[in-house]
Length: 148
Image (cartoon, rainbow, N blue to C red; front, top):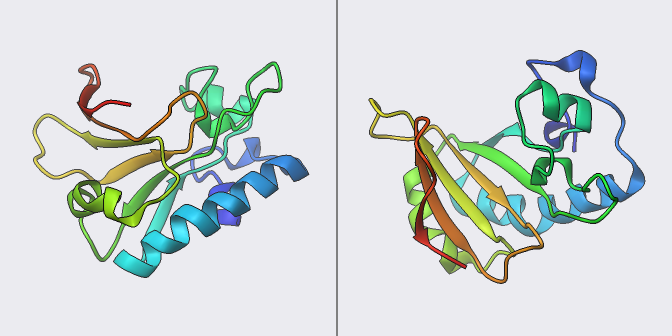
């Protein structure tokens, strides 16, 4: 669970999450992360739950799914940025649908000068009916490859 809560960049901003957040993270770990680890091996979590102060420090948007709950208390979903160690992010991105996971967004992030990505964003946001696959290259806008 710690891997979904920690911050290497801002450890002083990490706070103990509420029991509601812990329940949401456990469900995400069991229904999303573990099946991916079973299929693809070791997966490092670069970013998971962010409390509002941590989210602001990393430049996250106010209603980031990484915060799990909106400022009004409504449930947003759960998000994690993952870095597979024994498979490529492109492989997981291309094969994600076959695992039938409760995901609503998967984003492949790349730098313009790099053809291979280092991480994927996964989330279970509540404002989408089905999976949307996107790519973001550098500071460009998100490109939808399949849209919910």
